[in-house]
Length: 113
Length: 108
Image: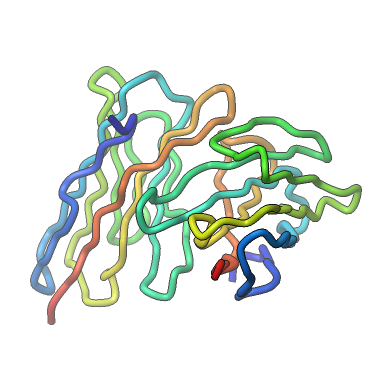
């Protein structure tokens, strides 16, 4: 158990809808990262937050947004969903930035029908 | 072209064999990560290194900064080592790029 929790585990929704994925980092970790893993693209970095502020952006679509709250949990919002958004979404946390070991959550499997 | 290249894509070994997975990256990095993804999907960080060599149990990771190359070695492989091993490079701007992964199957 990494200490990182993600909810929900599975999510099935329809095209055009909006969903919110939630992540609670390990106790004491200030950074949260979001990743997308799809069959055709592999793992891709989406975005990083550090102590409530956006620190780095990767291949995140404009339809996607994230935030980190004062209690350090983070939410990833996916809107106007398309079939191609179906993927595993992982959250990871680390004590500081990307130079530190990251601890991954169990992932949320999103299926868009 | 992926900035992080892994080889081989697939690897089948007999229990007890010594295994090597290779990773090359195309530009300067702040750290190189080796991850293990189990068949159930969970990801575990095995190593993070920026120079030299690290060892944890039967796993060894090395990095050569000049050659932009890293290797993950597994000694005395066991069926429970069967998983996908992923190399990832993190950069000073906190971006992270992943290799496509190596699917390892260790047969008893």
